[in-house]
Length: 125
Image 1 (tube, helix red, strand yellow):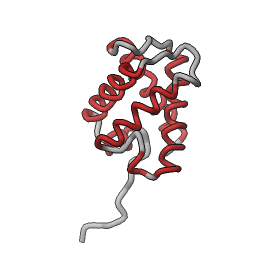
Image 2 (image 1 turned 120 degrees about the horizontal axis):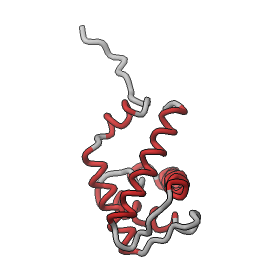
Image 3 (image 1 turned 90 degrees about the vertical axis):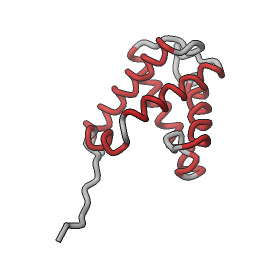
Image 4 (image 1 turned 90 degrees about the horizontal axis):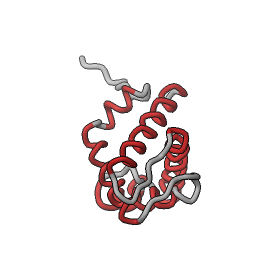
Protein backbone atom coordinates (compact mmCIF):
# COMPACT_ATOMS: atom_id res chain seq x y z
CA UNK A 1 0.00 0.00 0.00
CA UNK A 2 1.29 3.42 -0.88
CA UNK A 3 1.30 6.39 1.47
CA UNK A 4 -1.46 8.00 -0.59
CA UNK A 5 -3.50 4.80 -0.33
CA UNK A 6 -3.11 4.75 3.45
CA UNK A 7 -4.15 8.40 3.72
CA UNK A 8 -7.23 7.80 1.57
CA UNK A 9 -8.12 4.71 3.61
CA UNK A 10 -7.94 6.67 6.89
CA UNK A 11 -10.03 9.51 5.47
CA UNK A 12 -12.68 7.06 4.24
CA UNK A 13 -12.63 5.30 7.63
CA UNK A 14 -13.05 8.64 9.40
CA UNK A 15 -16.03 9.51 7.20
CA UNK A 16 -17.59 6.12 7.93
CA UNK A 17 -17.12 6.69 11.67
CA UNK A 18 -18.78 10.10 11.34
CA UNK A 19 -21.76 8.52 9.55
CA UNK A 20 -21.92 5.79 12.20
CA UNK A 21 -22.01 8.53 14.85
CA UNK A 22 -25.06 10.00 13.15
CA UNK A 23 -26.90 6.69 12.72
CA UNK A 24 -26.07 4.63 15.79
CA UNK A 25 -27.47 5.34 19.25
CA UNK A 26 -24.81 5.03 21.95
CA UNK A 27 -22.07 6.22 19.59
CA UNK A 28 -21.46 9.95 19.99
CA UNK A 29 -21.02 12.12 16.94
CA UNK A 30 -17.39 12.79 16.13
CA UNK A 31 -15.66 15.78 14.63
CA UNK A 32 -13.55 15.01 11.59
CA UNK A 33 -10.35 15.31 13.64
CA UNK A 34 -11.64 12.92 16.32
CA UNK A 35 -12.93 10.53 13.66
CA UNK A 36 -9.54 10.57 11.90
CA UNK A 37 -7.76 9.90 15.20
CA UNK A 38 -10.29 7.13 15.96
CA UNK A 39 -9.59 5.55 12.56
CA UNK A 40 -5.86 5.53 13.32
CA UNK A 41 -6.41 4.13 16.84
CA UNK A 42 -8.79 1.43 15.55
CA UNK A 43 -6.26 0.46 12.87
CA UNK A 44 -3.44 0.25 15.42
CA UNK A 45 -5.49 -1.79 17.91
CA UNK A 46 -6.64 -4.06 15.06
CA UNK A 47 -3.04 -4.53 13.95
CA UNK A 48 -1.99 -5.44 17.52
CA UNK A 49 -4.85 -7.95 17.85
CA UNK A 50 -3.96 -9.48 14.49
CA UNK A 51 -0.26 -9.66 15.41
CA UNK A 52 -1.03 -11.35 18.72
CA UNK A 53 -3.75 -13.77 17.65
CA UNK A 54 -3.45 -14.12 13.87
CA UNK A 55 -5.64 -13.10 10.95
CA UNK A 56 -8.68 -15.09 12.09
CA UNK A 57 -8.97 -12.88 15.18
CA UNK A 58 -8.70 -9.68 13.16
CA UNK A 59 -11.51 -7.14 13.36
CA UNK A 60 -11.29 -7.19 9.57
CA UNK A 61 -11.87 -10.94 9.50
CA UNK A 62 -15.17 -12.38 8.46
CA UNK A 63 -17.64 -14.10 10.69
CA UNK A 64 -18.73 -13.83 14.28
CA UNK A 65 -15.19 -13.76 15.68
CA UNK A 66 -14.22 -10.80 13.49
CA UNK A 67 -17.47 -9.07 14.45
CA UNK A 68 -16.87 -9.56 18.19
CA UNK A 69 -13.26 -8.43 17.93
CA UNK A 70 -14.50 -5.38 15.99
CA UNK A 71 -16.91 -4.58 18.85
CA UNK A 72 -14.07 -4.84 21.38
CA UNK A 73 -11.75 -2.69 19.26
CA UNK A 74 -14.36 0.04 18.76
CA UNK A 75 -15.24 0.00 22.45
CA UNK A 76 -11.56 0.15 23.49
CA UNK A 77 -10.80 3.00 21.07
CA UNK A 78 -12.85 5.41 23.19
CA UNK A 79 -10.17 5.28 25.90
CA UNK A 80 -7.59 6.69 23.48
CA UNK A 81 -9.64 9.20 21.48
CA UNK A 82 -10.74 12.42 23.18
CA UNK A 83 -14.40 13.16 22.52
CA UNK A 84 -15.28 9.58 21.56
CA UNK A 85 -17.86 7.97 23.82
CA UNK A 86 -19.35 4.59 22.98
CA UNK A 87 -21.67 2.35 24.97
CA UNK A 88 -21.41 -1.42 24.59
CA UNK A 89 -24.65 -1.43 22.57
CA UNK A 90 -23.25 1.44 20.48
CA UNK A 91 -20.08 -0.56 19.77
CA UNK A 92 -22.18 -3.59 18.75
CA UNK A 93 -24.35 -1.51 16.43
CA UNK A 94 -21.34 0.38 15.04
CA UNK A 95 -19.55 -2.89 14.26
CA UNK A 96 -22.72 -4.12 12.53
CA UNK A 97 -23.07 -0.93 10.45
CA UNK A 98 -19.37 -0.93 9.54
CA UNK A 99 -19.68 -4.61 8.56
CA UNK A 100 -22.68 -3.80 6.35
CA UNK A 101 -20.81 -0.95 4.69
CA UNK A 102 -17.88 -3.32 4.17
CA UNK A 103 -20.22 -5.74 2.36
CA UNK A 104 -20.90 -3.15 -0.32
CA UNK A 105 -17.24 -2.31 -0.89
CA UNK A 106 -15.42 -5.60 -1.53
CA UNK A 107 -11.82 -5.94 -0.32
CA UNK A 108 -10.38 -6.27 -3.82
CA UNK A 109 -12.11 -3.07 -4.91
CA UNK A 110 -10.92 -1.23 -1.79
CA UNK A 111 -7.39 -2.45 -2.43
CA UNK A 112 -7.36 -1.29 -6.04
CA UNK A 113 -9.09 2.01 -5.19
CA UNK A 114 -6.59 2.65 -2.41
CA UNK A 115 -3.56 1.78 -4.53
CA UNK A 116 -2.89 -1.52 -2.80
CA UNK A 117 -4.36 -3.96 -5.32
CA UNK A 118 -2.36 -7.11 -5.98
CA UNK A 119 -1.38 -7.96 -9.48
CA UNK A 120 -1.16 -11.54 -10.54
CA UNK A 121 2.20 -12.64 -11.82
CA UNK A 122 0.68 -15.59 -13.66
CA UNK A 123 0.12 -14.95 -17.33
CA UNK A 124 -2.55 -16.59 -19.39
CA UNK A 125 -0.93 -18.67 -22.13
